[in-house]
Length: 172
Image 1 (cartoon, one colour):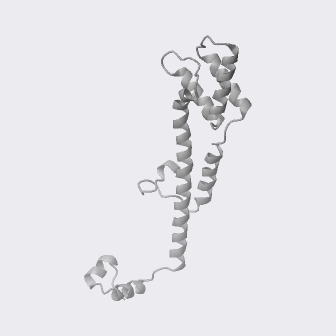
Image 2 (cartoon, rainbow, N blue to C red; image 1 turned 180 degrees about the vertical axis):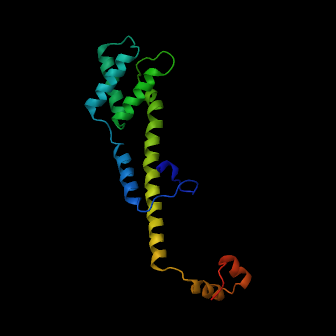
Image 3 (cartoon, rainbow, N blue to C red; image 1 turned 45 degrees about the vertical axis):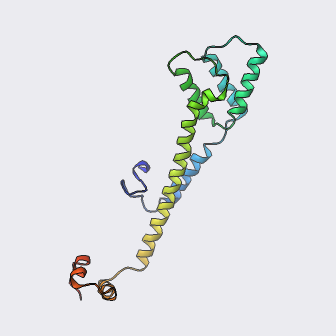
């Protein structure tokens, strides 16, 4: 439902009172951007190593490569790292174990961007919902009565024809 609520009015209106829920959803998405724990990152990279072609390298070089990958991917959430590693393994062509984080970033960055954009979008929807709720409360607190319309039109010096276009009810 939230995907059909767009800030430019091309979709469904945001339900009244949805601001708090939207804000909570935005926070969940923002919290999901937390980096993965070091041990989990190591586990995922070990699985990637098992699923790719290994280069002929010295064990110390392999250990250094793994450590560099862990350091350079320390900001990546675990679920995004897992998804990116699966995508890397399943991409067409021969896949060697990456020697730099940049090879994986091609798969990671779109997912990170999507999550950040979703959190931002939900926060904007929450702000819009709050503005709409405040405006609805303002209108409910000071409703326009039929006589008020005639007074406003007179103050604005609008013609009777213009008044009829704005309010088709006969003036009292």
